[in-house]
Amino acid sequence: MLGFKGKYGFSFSLSRLLGVSSLKNSIARKTGIPTTKGGMERKIGRKVLNLLFKK
Image (cartoon, rainbow, N blue to C red; front, side):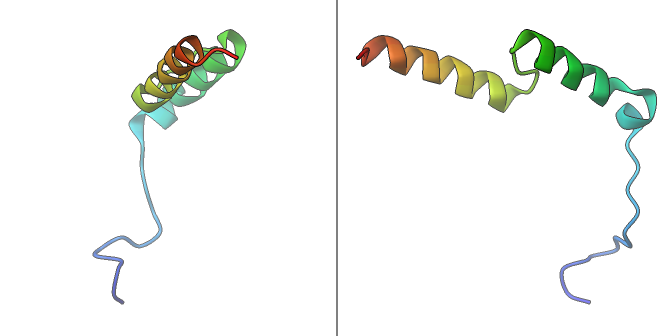
C-alpha cells in the first residue's frame, strides 16, 4: 500500500458542498477571467508576452 498514506478513496470539500467551486467555475466561464491564482498569472503573462512580441 505504498503511496496512499491513510487515504481510502474518500475526500471531503466544504467549498464543493456549499457550491463555491461551481459558482467560481461558472463565473470564470462567463467572464473569461480565471478565478485561480495560476490561471490569472497565465492569462496576465500571455497578455504581456503578446504586447512585447506583437506579430
